Every structure is written in structure tokens, then in C-alpha cells.
Image (cartoon, rainbow, N blue to C red; front, side, top):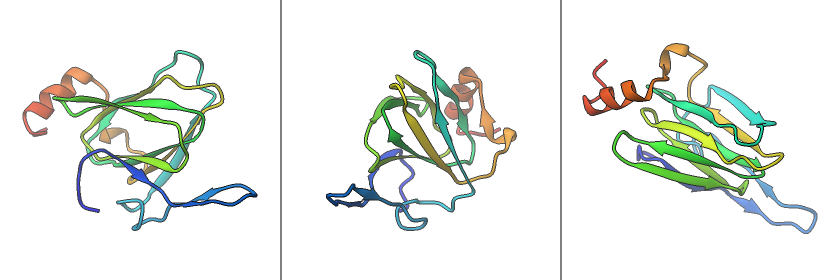
Length: 139
């Protein structure tokens, strides 16, 4: 995979009367080397998660349980991805503003990231994000 656009990835599904199985593999379904994974859960009603962009980090987000919306902003366009199936993954490259909202009760978001945690990789001010995005990210 070489495209650098956010997109939904359809993960493999193995259907079985005893319960279904979905998997993902680095280099096959994940378009980057995984350096970190984390999950978001027990989100109170009405809460919003995220609200930042990364300079380098890429992510893959999966709704393992329940549903939520991921709102992406590339500095020009805004797009909402509703995640509600564990066999769909949302790929988000770096330099895209994101936040997550509309979490259902007992939802579980799983995230695979291309970098280890690095506070210096975050842009947490949306106005600053828009400014550097319009200038071609010349920091």
C-alpha cells in the first residue's frame, strides 16, 4: 500500500457457526510497521477523544465493539467515518487532524500506531494545524 489518503480497509473475515474471526497482519493489511498499540474504552456519553494531528505517526483504528465516528480534517476538507464493524479499519496517515465522537455504550476502539509515543509529534492547536498545513508543513 502506498497511497497516503485516509481510507477504510476491509479486513479478512472467516465466518464460522461458532463465531467469526478477523485478523490483520503487518505489511499485508497494515501499511506501516507497528510500534505501539492502545485502546480507548469506557468513554462517557457525549465525550470527544483525540483533537490533534500527528506530524509523522500513522494509525489504524478499529471499532472492536460498539460504534463511534472518526472526524478527519486535512486542512481543507472534513470527512466523517462511522466505524461499527470489527472487520473494517480506518487508515489515517500523518498530518491529518482527527477526533472521535458519538461513542456507543461499551464501545472499544483499538489503535495501531506507526511510532512510539512522542509528545513532540503532536499538533494540538487546530488553528496552528491549519496554518502549517496551508504552508506545506514547513515548521
